[in-house]
Structures are given as structure tokens and as C-alpha cells.
Figure 1 (cartoon, rainbow, N blue to C red):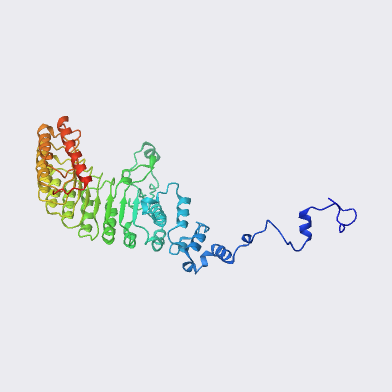
Figure 2 (figure 1 turned 135 degrees about the vertical axis):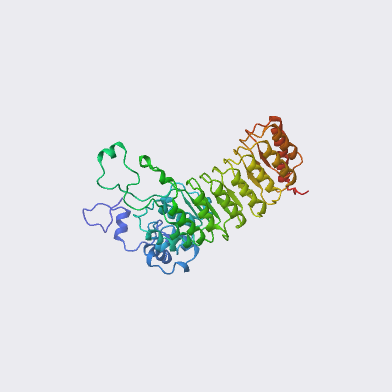
Length: 448
């Protein structure tokens, strides 16, 4: 390159970059673009992100501008700032992804905001230690999440921290002879739902298990049951929660007395449609209380699976069933109804035109119950599924069911596995079931 006339003597030639620095005006620059200059609106939106806590014009922004802000807001912002301002969308998705690895939004009505608040509140309740955690931690969340929480699935409830009394003899402690009841501190109560449920005005489902997960060597039997005070506070809370549609209290060692306390507060509940007391220790008195609830509620689904109900309890439920016009599904699996209870249920169904699903599996019922249910199958066109598996129905019971099914067009499920019924009879019943399923798919009316 030839040396410029304007270069000082002894200087080396300069490249294009050096020349550009010396020139004040660049007439042509192929690398320059107007897009490199941020717009004023863009700069304003970025300032909104930085100062969101004091922002008062968020609701006046367009959808595109809101998405721009949601994509950049830090998820660490206080809920008091974001809860009632930012609508469901990108921001809440980012908050969920940051806190939990598994985020299936389809379980929450495809709402990221609902997922965030439900799981956040569940976590606070499950880690709540009575006597240690302040209740205001729960109450402060209520105004922020009350419009978004529709379901609570509580998988554990912690108990108070109890210290042994001072002055115990070391030998007794070493030998394990200390008395479990000799402790200072409050009774073994769990979280008090009465301070919360009334305030959750959109709550529709409540699932609760009274247990402590991963307790290890600190195991105590009382960690895995609700006590009298727990039941009293929960019953009071359930009565105040007028929007509740589904209640599930399982694996919590609930007995007759506790069921009666709960049912007393649920009588006449305006919205309860599904009740699950499965895997508890409910006996006949508790079943009688549930039977009374069937006559004074609008329950559609009742699950009493795996309890200790015998024929008197089943008779009480059957009596209520004969008068009920709302129940669609009844699950009494893994009880001890025997034939007296099984026949009582069958006789009740002769006067019931709403029940569609009946489960009497593993109830020690035999042929007489199968024969009684065969009469129901022959007369009742509402019933769609019957489960009698794991019973000893015998040859007579199997033949009665086969004969009744041969004239039935409504039952699309009849489970009689492990019931001592001849395989040929089982095959014949299954063939009728498959035929009925095909009729259902074609849209034929059962009355035709």
C-alpha cells in the first residue's frame, strides 16, 4: 500500500480500522443497521422489568408486551408483588420449572399458575411443625393463592417435636424401658385445617394422609393416624368449605368414632360428590354413619375399600342405597360382608336405578350372593360393571350369573376372576360382556 500524503514522516501505513477511528463521519458502513438501535418502547419494557415492584401500568400493556416482561422477570420476586398481578403464562411456567423437575401441567387444568400455588401451599402444609412453625406463614399465603387453589394433595403431616422429660435414668433409656407417654410438650396433633379451608373459596378436592414420610428409626405409631383433636378440627373445617366436591382420607387409621365425627359435619353438604375412606379401620358403626350420609347428601362416588365392615355395616349401607337416587359408584372391596351383607346390597339394587358400578371383590361372599346379584342383572338396566373377584362363588353362583348375563345388554364389565367358577362359564360371561361393549360403542340405547 502506498504511503498517504497526510501521514507524518516515518509513520507506517494504517489499516481501515485505524482510518475509521480518525474519521468523524462514516458515509457508508455495510455492517451498520438501524435494528441495532433499540426502540424507545423496548427500552421502556426493560426498565419495567428492572423496576417491576413499583410498576402500576402492567395491566394497560398489550399481550405481546406482557409476554416480553414475563420472559425476563426473575422468579425470585416476592409473591406479594406477582400473585395478583401477573396472569397465568410464561412467568409461572418458569417459576414451576425452577422449583420442581417434574411439571405435568395437564393435572392442573393446563394452568401453570394453579400448579405453582397448589404445590407451594402443599409443601408449606407438609412441612408445617405444630408448635414450631408459625401459623401466619400459612395465613399470609391465603390472600395470594385463594383464587387459584382447586385441589390439595397432602401426602404427609408432621407431628410436634417432643422432648423427653429431664432426669430420666440412663439405664432405662439404654434398655428401651422408658414410657412413651412421659414427654413434655403438646399432644400429638397435626396441622389444623380449620385455619385454612374456610378461606380457600375455590377448593374442590382435598386428599389427606395422616403419616410422616421417611421417619426412619424415629417411627411412632401415632405418626400414622389422626387423633381426636385432629378429627375435630378437620370436621369443623370440612363443614366450612362449601365448595368441596371430593374428599379423600385414606391410610390414616380412621375408626368408627372418627368417621361419625366427620359424617356429622358433612350431612347436607351442598357440593360434596365423592367420598373416599379407603384403607382405614372402619367397622360397622362407621359404615352405619356413612349410610346415613347417603340419605342426606348428593354423593355420587363412595369408596370404602379395605376396611373392617361386616354384614351389619353392609346392611346399613344397603338400606340407604335402596333410598338413594344419586350414587353412581360403590366400592366395598376388601371388607368382610359375607353373604348376609352381599344379599342385602343386591336386594337394595332391585329398588335402585342410579348405581352403575359395584365392587364387592374379596368379601368372603359365596353362591347365595351371586344368585341374588343375578336377579339384579336380569332386572336392572342401569348397572354397567360388577366385580366379584376373589370370592368363592362356586358352580351354582357361576351358573346363575351366566343365565342372567345371557339376557343382559347393559353390563360391560363382569369380573369373576379367582372365584371358583368354571372356566367355560367365565368364557361365556366374557363373550356377553364383549358383545355389550360393542353395542355401547355403536351408540345403541340399552332400552332398545
